[in-house]
Length: 324
Image 1 (spheres, rainbow, N blue to C red):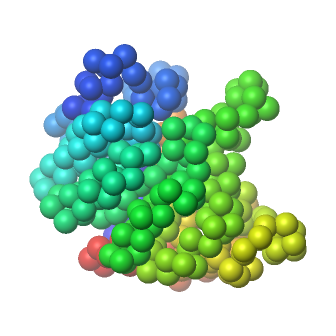
Image 2 (cartoon, helix red, strand yellow; image 1 turned 90 degrees about the vertical axis):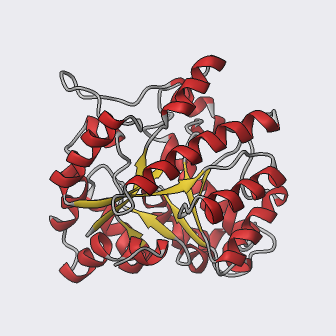
C-alpha cells in the first residue's frame, strides 16, 4: 500500500480560530488551484474528507499522514497552546474515525519549549499521533536548531520518535527571493536545504541517533551539495561531528519534486532508496497534476523496480512504525 507521508489538512476549528484572530493560512498566500478546476478538499469537514478519500482511492493511496505546516507559532504561549490543541485534536478525531486511512504529525506551540514538550506528550501518548512536525523556521526568523529547542530533540530521541520538517514559507526572510515572487518556487526548497545544514552544524542527528528525521522535498538542493559540504564545511563550521554527507544519510526525505525525474535520480543516488518516502504535498501539486501522478511518476523513472517498491510501499511504514 502507498502511504502519502506529506499531505496537508487544516482542521476547521483552527481555521475558525484564525478567522476570529484576523489571521490566514499559509502566511496569507492561498494554495494554488488549476484554472477551471474546483479547489481540492483540504479541511476536516465530512464532505471534504469523503472527497479526499475518493482521490486517495483513485490514486491507490491507502493512508495519508496529515500535517499543518504553518503551526500556531505566536508570541503568546496560551494562544499557541490553544492553536496546537485545536489542530492536534482535529487530527486525532480523523485518525480515530479512519485508523486505516489517516495518521498525523502533531504541531507544537513553538517557540514555547516547556509547553511544546507537554503538548508533544499529550499528542503522542493520549491522542496517538505518529510524530511531530516543525517548520524550518520558528516565528519566521529562528532556526529550530537553536540550543533553546534541544529538550524537544532529547524527548523525541528518548521515544525513538519521528520529526518532520517542512518549509515555513518565509523565503528565508530574503528580499532577494521574496521581492521577486520566489518565496515558494525557490525559497521553500532552500528552507529545506538550510534546516538540514543547521542540523549538521549543531550535530543534532549524531547526538540524537534514535530520532528519525524526515525532510520535505528531497531536502531541497541537498542531494547536489553533499560533496561540496564535505569539502567546504569542515574548515569553516566549528564542531562538526562527522562529514556532512554522513549526517545527511541519517535522515529521510520525501519524494515531492513536482514530477522531476532528475530530482528523484539525484536524491536516490545521494541518499539511497531506503531513505526516500513517498509524498505528494497534498493539495499543493494538484494545481499542476493529478493526485495519482504524484506517485506514478516514480514508476515511470529509471530507478530499479525493487527500489520503487520500497519507496512507494514500505519505507514510510517502517519510519513511522505503521503496519506494512
